[in-house]
Length: 158
Image 1: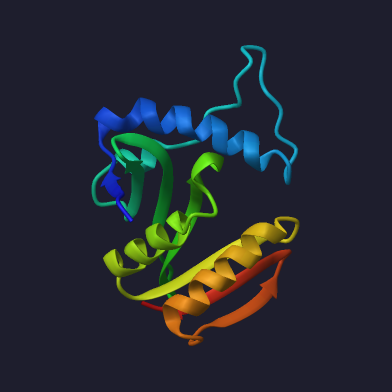
Image 2: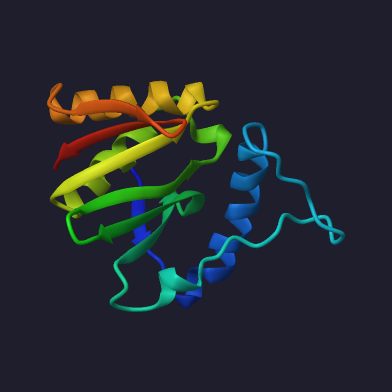
């Protein structure tokens, strides 16, 4: 599968902001997001993803020189915990169900080695099915799953 995952810099900021509008639109099915007076959704807080050393990583995904999605990843470091987490994951509908999401997720798990925690909100059954399948295949069944505070959470080590 021919695709590229590019870590964003300021050059990609507008692209990421624009793709985020489609993501929020898709996600409005599960959470009550509405457009503002200008006809756009409220901007997603992306500034931290453009600061070096803060353990937040933003990627845009390209296929055949066209932008087709993005992924936001965070390294969470608490006193007792240290793990990567996918904050947001988006593939344009036109490119879904082709194995692209699984390929992108696998690439990211391999880029960021270590403990992972991936979560989905309770109402997003499609995301739960997708992530369970992706993580099960990636880990060959070596992951744990739990439900906590209205979220399904998978934990594993890449």
